Image 1 (spheres, rainbow, N blue to C red):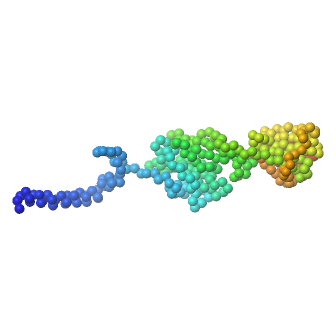
Image 2: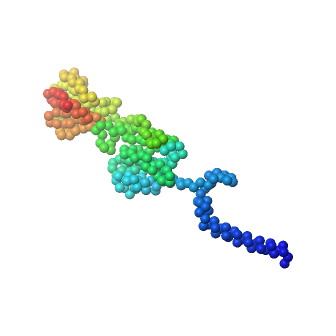
Image 3: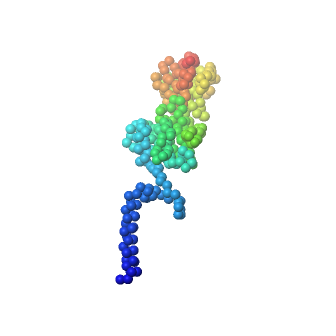
Length: 294
């Protein structure tokens, strides 16, 4: 064997040993581990290597955050109703809006927004309200809620719905003005007293707003406005046709009926109608009409 062949053979033996040694050194080196766990932020030779945590905007994460921040008021096993992901906390941000279930007649009564900063989710907004599903409008959030008129039962709104936009002002989410989305229901209630001598109508909508009654035995009528003022008329001309619509119900003694801001109560002594908030109103019987309330 000549000298050239001997040198070539020694080189072939050394190359695997060098590669193996480098591999063992790199696997245990902190710098090597950092390179493996990072990703390239650019392309081409010399591009920087940046380590970055990724926000997990998901129902699973939302459930953990709801429990961690004690947002599950009703202790439901699956409280998350909706998860909305977007840059709601500024340009380039990662945020998550969550609606939270309620075990009552209105299924969603709370929502929250989290911002992903420094590898962690931070609570930036916590709202309690009866709401419909949230909607992302670019980097803003549109909140839609029912409109409750005075006197509406807790979970039976009659005023339609309105919406507002939540926008990040650089430090926090701030709400815009409310805008009506759907119209309220037409609420008009009509009834007879058990004696059939008095008939009343009350409503709180653009079609009819107020509470009015008339009695036939002593011809008279009265109308109550939302500000508590009365318009009283006495005499047969106050009754118009002197009739009432057919098929209207009777309001038993001791029972009351409500339409928006107005309420009427049937008593043996007569019918009392008032504005709920102020208590101002009237009482009408077979003899007269008089004011009631403060």
